[in-house]
Length: 100
Length: 427
Image (cartoon, rainbow over all chains, first blue to last red; front, side, top):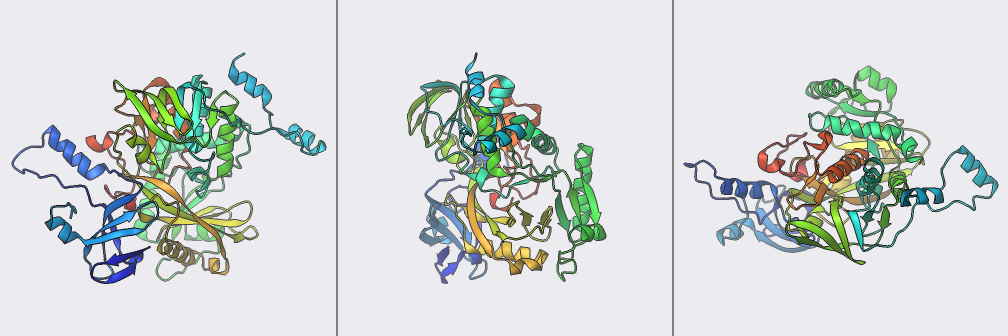
């Protein structure tokens, strides 16, 4: 499996570290308030629950042995085909998640 | 006469006399080991997944709880998933309270399995040796061994000389990872994995359980918060209760009921070498990397290591994980470099968020979940089926699986043997 890094080109997957699902969003936390039940539920979903799809999956990889950039990779989990690679920074700035 | 007894009469009981008798008749009168059944319109219990855990569940439902109007639905062929893809190792060398009694019960069931099933599963208690390579690791294994012995499980801490007498061919003086000793569980070992599937299938089938192959579940019908039946490749089937035992694909099947699980599917690869004469008597695990090896009765060395580390439903992995496994093997046993790898293959792992499984009821009445086995599901097969059958039949968990709750991720009662946190590819 090779991943087309936005900055370094196509590299073997051994150069990348995997963090997981890029679509989960970290809940907003209000540090002045105790967690209510709804907030607990949101954190539970963020930390633990995953869609885990068989098919296209948006996920976070870091090019640790290269440029060290975080990437949002869209990859088909049935075939390992990489469909799209975007800088995680761009995705975050566009409001599309990327939980880092 | 109930249906279970009728099927039992149709089947053959295996013994030395049946083997000799068949040999004299040219082995022409053996009957099929289990019935390949057609799907009926309704069952008391439907188990989704015809692997080791699903078949064991059906067997214990019939044997322990008298539930015989049971079906096991398998999307492919019986035993074609993880029960035929693992490295056949069984052990109960766990550390944490929720785990040790469960896996020890599994070990006890393994010890009596062949007599119970009247089927040769080639249970071989050849000993599982976990090597340590540093003082800190020795202390950690001493702690683990003590935890095991406090739970009544056998464990023996071996020093370097004792390990050397047992397995002299290791690279004891490896510059980076010298072997300092190991934690041995002599009751651990290997079991012929396909025979486990066939043996449980036979035991369930002769008690009246219908095993239906090529019957993928495509939908789940829920009325008033209760599951009433399943849409399958062979049509609708009504079900009083439904048990999911489809690890690897648990998220996909649970999604049919609108559930999101604390699970990611990952691929784990395993390997077998060409056959050689008896070489490795025990199961040996490397402590400085992730590598485990044993020798099958056919002579091939069976070994594996880490999962590839990314979500996958592909049933195959990539080369970096293979390289890592082979490097670990070479660091432990340089002689492996003289052997050729015969085959490698992949299986799908339900990697849970704390590295421990789930055997529990779900928020939907009549729907039960057996999932999240990470890459340790094979050794758990008997106890998993036994506990899941109890949970389904009595509508509440047994004490042995009481810690394997689905809601433990919300309540904070995690069972994290490795202490890796909610990062499934690190468990």
